Image (cartoon, rainbow, N blue to C red):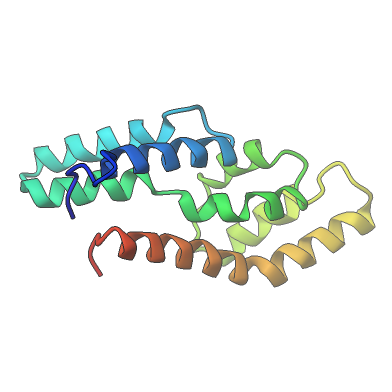
Length: 151
């Protein structure tokens, strides 16, 4: 991976920064959230002694860390009252614990709607959850591969 200017004079870092800002907007984060994540990840990498190439990969992966989530933001918004606040709370739920994950969505899906709407939303989230996770993962992996960020 190189950050040298292309024939058009555009560097990879500039393209990734633009995509990162768009991802921040799409996911309801403050602008430069991805940049802050990348700086923290890079500083941690320096502290543990990563080399230049590894630090470069850490930087780009962190900058694009939620790009796959941006692809599903609109779909997620249909199921919850406030997708941005729900997304922030979701970060505190252990995804390896299916019961806690299910309880979280039982509470969040259509929280202010009728009981029937809540049931429909929970069923929709449950039935689409794996597909949404797959889309997020696949988009992230494809972009990482296009940028030659490892396996």
